[in-house]
Length: 191
Length: 279
Image (cartoon, chains in turn yellow, orange):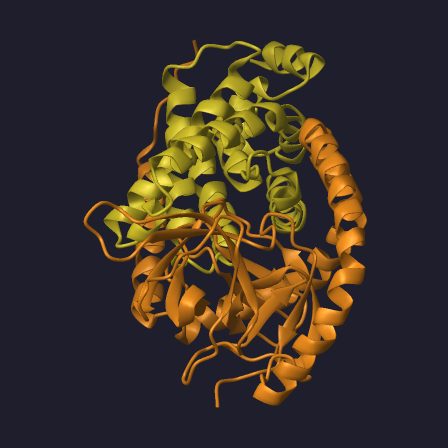
């Protein structure tokens, strides 16, 4: 089995584990009624580590898994949102983001807030007006607290993602951001 | 700064995925919660439910610990408030015992079905709403345990919601805070009304339906229960909420009433499903 196939399998397992944690544990971690969203974090990390294609593919499947457990929004809405976010982060990573150690947590925070707004915007366009029923203040609260959660969670989950994605095409090109210092040095030497 | 060339393949993959997602949204929205997408959801939930149960059982203490750490200040105040309340209730207990006996006699005479033994199924929450825009939760029992769509779901404090959809081993509960949720209630002075959700973490709105003069004069903290009228989705006398505010705007004949749910919908664990359907 090639290194790329193994990396894909590890990412698939990571997605399943993230789904179980999201549905079984995340709701116990509510702060002011808002829970973290691990699935969007995985999509963002995929975009950061593997570029826009990996971000789109992983984002699509992480969103699709999330959609399986949502009863008030149609299947595919989270998949659409996370796919677009993953692709945009991958594109931004390749063109405008600097190589800085804080790029992962800061990007995770900003991208999560953007994903919340994008989810509601896509929902509104696709006839899911009930997402705005709770009011603008709830939307802002969700965006801010989810973003803060993912700022913190991006460090351990980013490390896990970089381990899972080791060997994939994307991570060879983009993996430095999420890798450990030693890994970064090795990759820098290869380049 | 890293600069990389975006290949046309990447654009193609992204476009295909976006189209696939839009197709799924369209199919699911048109099927109105039934059809092939609902079947797929149901099957996936059944596959994941053992993993969710096991993870929930193992990691719930960690979640409780973290929640306690985050809410330490409010928990301390809540603890003191509850201690005071227990002392006060203990004083009232003896006084109420005699009144309760009389009340039970009256209720038995009026044949209120909720007081009689409606069969129940005890269930555990395995998914307390995966998204922050959800007003649904998932429980660990489904059609195999006799649970069916529309049945009321209650907790120790009162009404939680009702069963929305059922798979073999799990079921989805629509919480009473959902904006589409409506339940008929009894108000003061022989009036009735309907309670509507306004979103997770928000209060409930009451619309007065039938009015006996004078219009309902509700006071803050007053409990409100289901009316159980003909064709209602719920049996009578299930506590729904307590009055948060009741003010009559200038020029209006009916008061604007808001309620707080009696059950803390952010911390649900074990619930009871009433195996009840409207006659």
